[in-house]
Image (tube, rainbow, N blue to C red; front, side, top):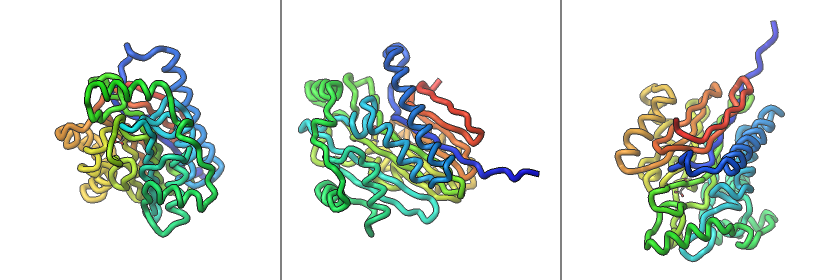
Length: 315
Ligand code: ASP
């Protein structure tokens, strides 16, 4: 009898929001689908080579950070002051180790810095100038703000400024709330779950605003016995609802199936508060669940049987 190899799997997202078929050109859609597929495969390769779940999530997120279509790294949205300030976090499920950065301005891949905070500092979260100094101590190459600048994000910012909105949306139109934060969850051969999330935040943000993506328990959570979760949506609500760790808590204390915990939060309490968005989750068997209360979420999965699925719309 051949011994069955342990399951491995990865799921990723590129943000949730009002993603409408009629507003999406075929060209853009196929570029986005390609990037999602590339990201999932980059992460899966790490897992298939026997690598750690956290490294798999970081590899997948890096691909999306480098793609201008997503609100993270290169394609980050702009602050009120026309700058990019990025947040990112990671969590490893074995010992619940975690790392996070907030308000980072000159690092091309903040997700790598978040992992380095976890691995090479005694802290969990580093902020702004301090995070930059930490990056420097590890010999990171800094990039100019110009690297992050895209015409699309500049137009979105101008439109938000004209409307006088604090604009908790990256979108061009107030009703058209696209987010575009990126994240990944994975299960490796050793049974480790991990989660990683990275974002430019929300367009026109002011005063050093930090969202859920930098906050362990809100935007990112992983614990081997229950679940790994990465979220996307209006961060203020996800923080107040501690969405990511609440999924794990419901599974742990109520013994709920993962999908029930996710949907109860996303379609119930979060939605009632006014929080739009979604999450990706993976359990210790490599089963995944996508949950969203918006019309779409860019997402992909490679299941334990090795099948790749890429989707955008909720239905
Ligand atoms: N959650 C992110 C934030 O509030 C936004 C997003 O998901 O796109 O910063």
